[in-house]
Image (cartoon, rainbow, N blue to C red; front, side, top):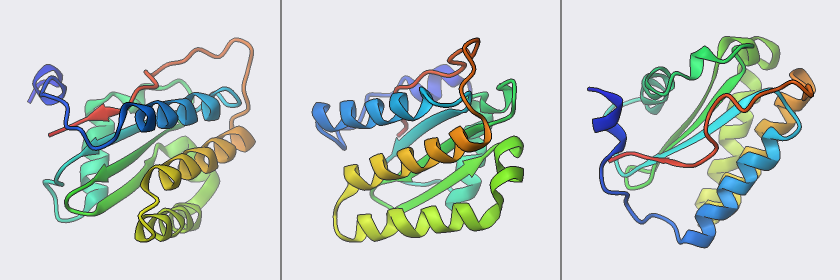
Amino acid sequence: MNLLNLFSRKKQSFFTSEEEERMVEAIRSAELQTSGEIRLFVESKCSYINPVDRAIELFGELKMHETKDRNAVILYIAIKDRQMAIYGDQGIHQKLGQEFWNNEVSLILSEFNKHHYVDGICKILGDIGGALKENFPYDREDLNELPDGIVFGK
């Protein structure tokens, strides 16, 4: 499937425009302090049993592995299936280890269980940004290698 077909579908209205802007601002704010990159991908249903497999697939399709320092992270959420995953490229994963990602998933799920979806997403985006800042601090010559907007799937 080519990228144009994957992302050119009609956008689903999972969030209000104000909520979307809050989440995009959380991405931008997190990235201002790091050379790392964060993407948020939201869709209705996950086409895999394990959402991590879908996150890995999207990571490749969005060419997130092409960042200079291999320090990109995708936050994947399938709203109707109530599934989510966080996947970090090898540069950041090696520095943080699996326990960091497991803890972040637990934190966001606790927010989701309270129906604090946007708050939970913004919180985790900030946490990921903080981890990226610690391990990949901002450099004046840093370029924003990936778009900051939310990517909506099917």
